[in-house]
Length: 220
Image: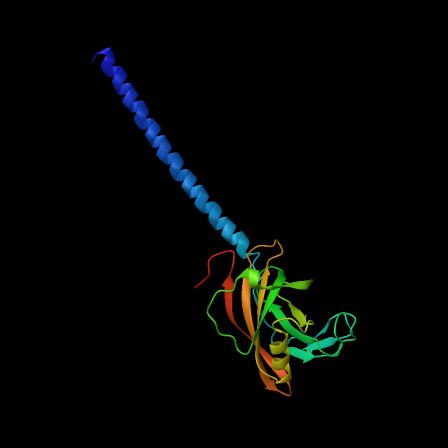
């Protein structure tokens, strides 16, 4: 073989070797990326809160609204009342108070971001938008594997939902609350829908019916 033939053969061999190395490197990178994504999903799963109603054998919680008003939140239930505050944070008799005991069945602290009220048993399948939620006036946390609570109140009679909220409570009718919350890193936000159903003696039983993921794909 001539010197030119040897040079051509060497060039082809070098090119083939480079191609094999490139394919191997690409495969290794893809495998590493895939492993990294699996590890990330596993890490996030360990930082994921899931809120549910409390169990019947959980403790009754007592919640203060800062104006002399207290609500007892029974295990597995909910509470709503009109009036009873001392007026230091708004009207003394016309405030509509809501409270819901919560159990965190997830793997991380749940940080409550906001809430959305619906009169009656709200059954819409439309995915809630985070921008439509009312922001919590205080930081509320629910520990992992433990219980906590949500609370809110309508104090302004000019609020578009004040009248229907007050009518719902005074007439002892069902009401629905959608809660927006996430983990303690401020991500993995979830919306959970809770409905309070009349159970007799002006008490409500709480149930959860739907969960929506905001920052990751839905499980459905």
